[in-house]
Length: 263
Image (cartoon, rainbow, N blue to C red; front, side, top):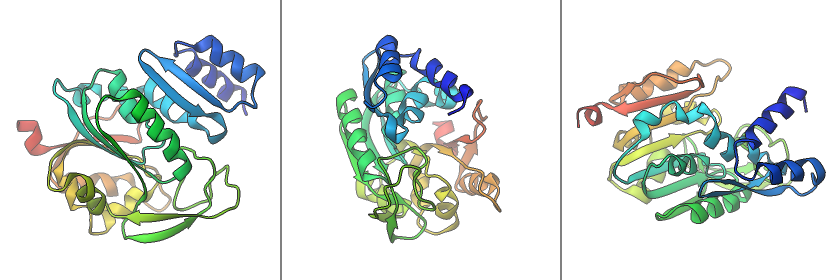
């Protein structure tokens, strides 16, 4: 681990209310991988062996999504579909910033991460929450994956950095199938997507028409070799969305449905 990475981790810890406890734990008890990060009302379960510190704590305390808060804020409770949820950082970010939540549906690839995801949502949110262990993909499929304890980089395309070598079976579902399972023909206020390059497959195949049922789409579009992020961005715009200005993280895109802008 580089000095820069260590310093970044220290700065992140310093943003939390129990910073001294976390610092002592990381310095003196490094074999204890589980920790609770406290920030205001939030109590966030983090597994350092799984790299969770690059997930929820980073999402909550950096500008990654905060730069878009003016568009995400609401005075009325919002519904959320979170695809590639990891340990729940995005809905926790919304809750921390006072965005009221009516219902949260979170979909996560790694079944081990789903355990921490469910804890973090049920412990910290006052709305109905549903967690599904599944993979968003362009075509329904059965995946045999080399996953570990979980991590923000878990992907359909490569073994996880902490893979044990064992195979985990995960079912892949299209966007439309996941949307209709939980929201039917309703409108969802916010859909957040962070699925490690799978966004290209999803937008290139049929089965993503229910994106039109989303008022706001927050998506991380990764730089995939041989492709351009514009492929994904332009496909979303073609569905009837306006692309809003990006923030300090160039990979995070925000789209607003055109009729929602006039509402």
